Amino acid sequence: MFLWVVAGIDQLFILLIAGVKLDQFELSEFAFREQMSEYTGKIAKLRRSLHKKLPQVRLLQRLELVIAGVLSVTLLTQLVQPILGALYALILFALINVLTRIRFVQTVSIKLFEPSLELILKTTEILQPIWFVVGTSKPREIVQPASLEEFTDQLRRIPSTVLNPTRRQRLESVLESEDKSVKDIMTPKRRVVMVEPSATLGPIVLSDLEKSGHGYFPVATKKGEPEGILKLSDLSDLQTAKQRSQVREQMSSHISWTEETATLYELALIILREKQYLILVRNEANEFIGVVTIADLMKHLLGVVEE
Image (tube, rainbow, N blue to C red):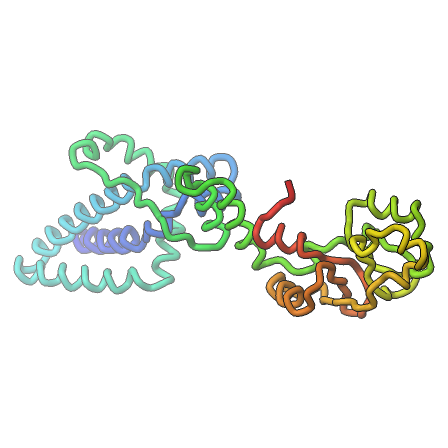
């Protein structure tokens, strides 16, 4: 009876050891760093050690299964006829192989694995001479990224001899632009330099506009909606500007609009269709909330920055 109990415990041991799928701990450096942000203290230390010694832990698992398997065959051949005992052992091994694929078994195995992780890691250190003789495989380098963030991380770690910093920056900008909308890159209304349609285009006003560093200005009253766009390059002839003194006489009444929720790709299509440098932005309530330019789009879509 005692041997039957030992044989049962041995089978349960094999089931729980085989139920621990160590592949789930095989992570890329990026995924491991992301995971480690959830742990602190002793647990974090054990996780780092597991990540480093995963090949040895995998060998220990196989060694335990071999020893437990040999013990199982020995017990069963003692309890019943040798041939019949070996057959029973094979059937049990096949059954255990099926059971280890059940999520419940894997969950229970992991719950028992984690509290004993410290003991497992110490055992791998004790058995270091065996690993030296047998040899351990190097941790598998996971090249295929599991997320866009991980791909971006890999992109940043490519040597400059392969991908120079400028090209890397442009690629990162393209990838990041997928998650951006017009609202993310526009200049808010409060920071937009605007001129009133009734303003006089004298030397002082023109000088102030030139000092702003911009070439295009929305034309609107302080509380009103934009009425047009003033292009500074059209005012190169100062005498002409003085003769036609008001802004509304020099502005273009053609205004191109985009929604704040539009993607950068949709913004690019609007710019190509309207052939305008300056695009005005409105919100869901159809209110003017800012402006966006080709320069903004180039900066965030292609990483092109003015020097």
